[in-house]
Image 1 (cartoon, rainbow, N blue to C red):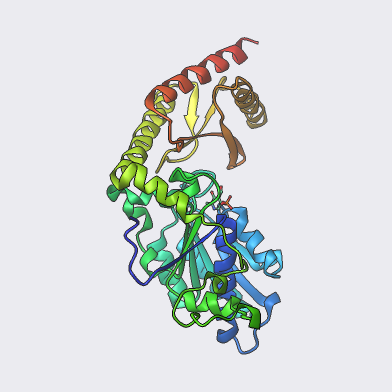
Image 2: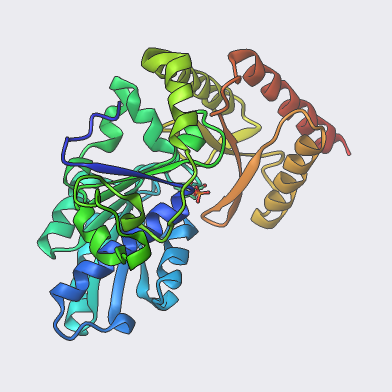
Length: 346
Ligand SMILES: Cc1ncc(COP(=O)(O)O)c(C=O)c1O
């Protein structure tokens, strides 16, 4: 469904945080071969300043210091800048640090910005680094043929995480890690004591060899049910509709002078804020928008989340629920305007 090359091996874990942690462990395993003076304190992992906190958590879980995660600047559309990545790696090599992993994000948490994986692949290859792609939320949208280009370049990545529990309507938890180098994950994790030896071990894939878990839940069953019930086309149509009504909402924001969009909308997450009065300072605007979001959420009718972009309190409307339709987006917009009007009158 994602049009990945056959060389990719897939394994289901619970969460993207855990999938990424395993990818970082594999990258660390490769680095042990690469650096004869391998030193965990000197390892460096590169991701954008918009990458999810699970990347830092993965690194610290594996015993790397937090300072091993280098945040690369993003452009005005919140995408990693490949030349900045190149510079950071080069400078670290000059300082005799040990670059070992790059994490690109396809669909960042705050804005769903899409790092240029094609170009990041080139930089990663130039320095022989493991490239992991975090497409936890947005990866599912790539099942829609006209959206597949968001994963362009991923064929040459070493690993990729996609969470069907986010935008493929599977109840939490179900995260898939794809990798073209399963043997490296196996090398990092395979320990087979006598009581786990079987006659079949040469003939079958034993998932205990590919991670920290021994026992496993039958998570694939719920994914299979979703595939069977909706069919591939059914799933594509739901995501397509989310993208369409996302554009509709972005358009409402753009056409209303009391609101502004704070990031591009490549998928169905719309980042915006209200602009009640041109004389308000940035601090006052931040406070106003926080109050607006709280009023809306306290209504119990709509749940908005938030982030900060360029120090601006940013409200986020994300469309990814299986039952979200155009009528809900129209209702959401009416509610947002109603609460806005209520606040400016007080
Ligand atoms: C881009 C991205 N990566 C990783 C995660 C973490 O996902 P999980 O809750 O499955 O660990 C999120 C969650 O919001 C995300 O948006």
